Length: 260
Image 1 (cartoon, rainbow, N blue to C red):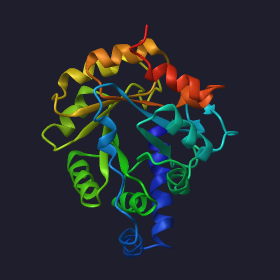
Image 2 (cartoon, rainbow, N blue to C red):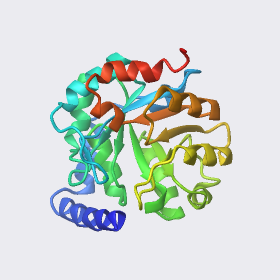
Image 3 (spheres, one colour):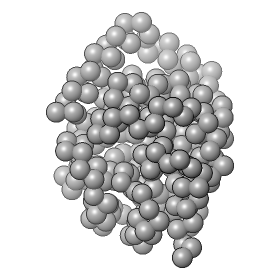
């Protein structure tokens, strides 16, 4: 299965990286980096916020858009009114790079979320060293203790952890953890099926003080209206924008969700 394959490849990739770069090296890099941008500030508005994603490919879709430059997309996203930018850094399936984080931040003033398959603390240090402001932690990849440790490490490095769930069982795994933000992925990572009703179902379990981001499958103004009515604070949109012939117009259409 996809998840098992990618975790296996990630473990090998991390092993190879650790052979050439130590944790001390990363800590030294971090000490010379400025503080991360405030990712939580993206959700201060009463209206729904958009985290616009740079995603050139995916396992379910193959190549989405490998022609447009990620730095250009970052500029478009900021101009279009995004509250933050999500950057895929997984290379094999999503055609991302860690260097994209730094390059995107040079082109846009928005906070940047690193999206990858985080299974080792080394990756959290690495993300911070490359300039991430927030980091995705996928609940199905980690047990409860690992999640707690990874959340605590992220916060200690001044990163905002975005913990992603897809099922009620995964919510049980993160209950009673001190989370500022929860992502609900409408895509089942095992079957790739997408259903926005996943957010509508799971948000009922989440305390109102926690900000919720709905991820995947958000394509229309109607989708955004539905999610806003359910109490979602933000949406993460990637494929819809990356496929658009006019991403600026598409963004503005989604953001102006209160306009009939």
